[in-house]
Length: 193
Image (cartoon, rainbow, N blue to C red; front, side):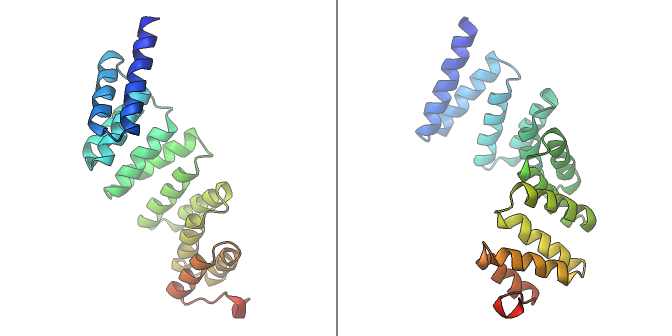
């Protein structure tokens, strides 16, 4: 029972430190948790997040790698690793991490979106369309996946598909639809309907 109380106490200290924006105190609490409870997924993920927040991307990547090695079924850990690898323009590694995240949690919409972005960078447009379509199925009211999907259709010389998306966006995100019209030269607004 004592270890459970110690763990709960350290977690509470870290939480209070985060609420008070005392990142150093929170980091020390997480480090203590990792010393006393090696491999704890919560402490590892939290410590990695603090590294990323502080701009220590390489340290964050290393901690997320350790997390997913220790806890290979941690879908959000794989997503966060993918996000940081994408930010570092390590496309193949990012794709692997996002793919693993979507395999673990097929409803993790952010991982599908990240996967789509990386596939665009790798110019694997067919796969990018599939990933972005899955993202838009999971988050139909978020404009981000729709925007990227329209851009891929333009890159694939499929203006009719892009126009369908722009028309769709006019229904709930007219500013994003207008941005796509400006960027692509496609007109799907009231005159183009």
